[in-house]
Image (cartoon, rainbow, N blue to C red; front, side):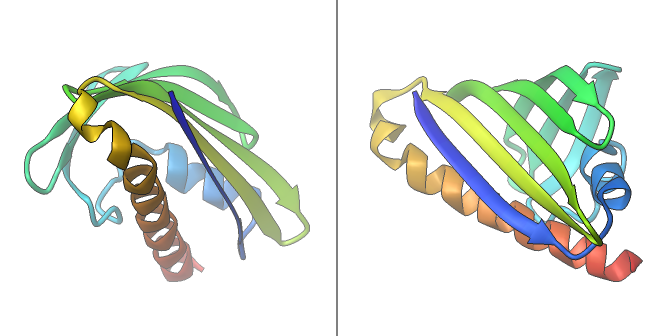
Length: 133
């Protein structure tokens, strides 16, 4: 299993950051996605711009504090969690992924792939927050 953690501060209150991150229906701000299918209140499928699907199952959703889900596609299986910590007018976010490669060929590249994905997500999130402020 490969673990990757991303910490950063967003210049926005925790309620707004929480709303953007947990609103699965509003995904247009994500530059890596082409669409999201919502299966039910606990499961959704994200599709990359190249049509690659990943299924997510929500485990816990504690408002403005903690969000977690499992994720799986034909290459990986794992768990994602997000912590949201109010720090005055800022929000500290801590996103952690624990992922297992299903195919040996991708195992050496998993950590760099996760870091790249997390960096892109944070960049997109910051741009979205900047637009709504």
